[in-house]
Amino acid sequence: MELMDTGLLETLTEIDEFVWGPPLLILLVGTGVFLTWRLGLIQVLRLPLALRYVRNSRKAEIGVKGDVSSFAALSTALSATIGTGNIVGVATAIKVGGPGALFWMFLAAFFGMATMYSESLLAVKYRTVDANGQMSGGPMYYIKNGLEHKKYSRVLAPVFTHVALFGIGTFPQVNAIVDSARIAFNIPEVLSALAISLFVAFVTLGGIRRIAAVAQLVVPFMAMAYVLGCLVIITLNLEKIPETFALIVSSAFTGTAARGGFLGAGVMLAVRMGIARGIFSNESGLGSAKVKEPAKQGLISMTGTFFDTIVVCLMTGTVLIMTDSWTEDLAGVYMTNYAFSTSLAETGGYIVTVGLMFFAFTTILGWNYYGERCTEFLFGVKGILPYKIIYILIVSSGAFLTLDVIWVLADIVNGLMAIPNLIALLALRKVIAAETEQYFEKLKLRGPEPKN
Image (cartoon, rainbow, N blue to C red; front, top):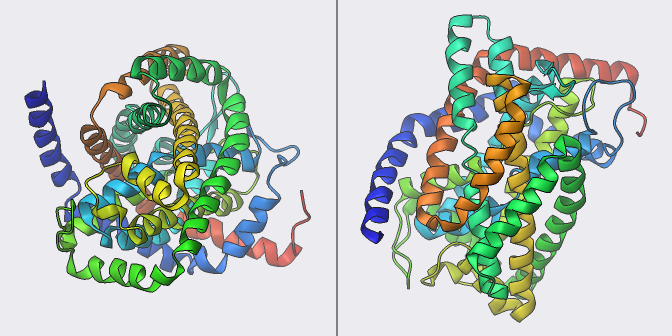
């Protein structure tokens, strides 16, 4: 069995290296850089406005089509991103790519904010209503309804949807919950897998409103608790901040020599791991928010990448590096758990364990909804219930896959998802720019928006 896993991992790694070669890295970062320039550094100059919108977005806009409030939509999107990508994924990236991976993760996230803004804007602009009266949006719809050349959209939309339908982001989450439950509470894998399946069934069968209700309750609370834990550790190690950031920046351009259990990493590997983890840690919205202007939801969704990757991932990586946990012969959640436990004793271990379990669970819910919309796109509403049943049945399989295989699979699928989506964003660049310019012109004319 071990030989089979080794052979599978080697094959998947070769595929992963091909998918995440220079062309995709250039396309991914290049799209973010281009959109940042075209939208006038929107992720910096309009971030204060976006944060104000988030603060006032708990109530849905009256008389506007949609399924949930903008805040609930943001929480649902964050539920599909704040998870193992922030805790286990960052640890994996630094373990393989060295501290420099954190620099490239940050850079990818910074430009990714402009990409996220554009994705969510288009998701709202080109969304439709399905036969059940629910909103359907996302890359597959703006590819299908937005691209003028239908011969391209007929290829790109199904390619994106079939890849996204696999919901590979689910497997790292299940695996993380099982590992955390075993580490902290000595709960057998089978029991954890059964409990996850039952909880997922209860929430997902209730539809987007129940998913959003759980997400907007759990995600902000657990994110604040986890960030507070990181801040405490950073405060306890303030004297190490200069050398920590010096190591991150220097490793980004020179690679990292082997230390302790660390294997050493070159610059290209650091770049690839940082960007790959950056894209795994943030994903586009699906147009479910009750909001009139696409640009407004774009701004709100843009903060998701800011909170998710720039804040949470950066803090996780800083903690791992300043505590020297990355040099230990540990991987995934074990590394993060070690960093918190050595600084905060048992309390630190519980912060990671409980936080990861909640993050991972809400991410499973978010990926379920993503897959549900993909199913509706391909097969109509009649395919939604069968999809949910199949999803619930296969959720527990992630508990029995090895960590290396899971993350390589996640990298491959996320890379394949990115390609048609990035092509569509570049093709629709004029639409994105026009919508943005019109929206800010309206804001100038009507003055500050009243609070919801």
